Length: 186
Image (tube, rainbow, N blue to C red; front, side):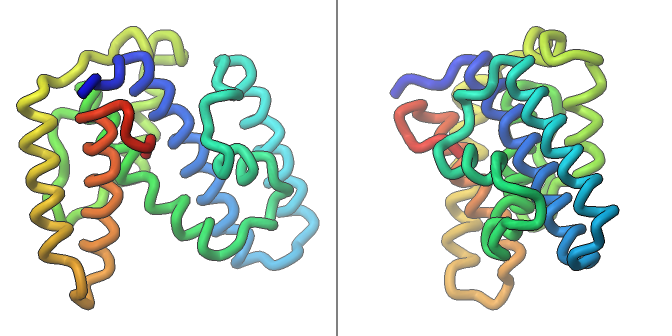
């Protein structure tokens, strides 16, 4: 099972970062309705993300669905896409951990903090520095984290604790890809 390279992990983390940021904007827009000022701000942010993805050679990195969502006009995401996009922070956190940008994973029933993830991406000052500073964790650490996520996912199935189930599912998917690059990307 070939593992993704550090470059593949970094690029995937950057795409997830863009997706989570966009989902956050979409969620905020839900609270403002059709406010033209907020819509204009959101559109400027969307255009900047497009430029950033192009500048960093990431335009081909999002999946087809992610590409459609990122290209969609602000305020047009379906509610399910907004919720799914917000949960992608768990996958982003796993990838940042796998590149040793984060020292440890939160407890299986605790979410990653968005501000921590943002600071990890931006603290290097450039995408090239972010990419250069990622160091792959060992296969054993990835395997142990995957086993933990699998156990928590199994315990959360059918329970009323949707938060833990969502955390476990997102982390399990990311760790599955880290174990085998042929698996669907998180």
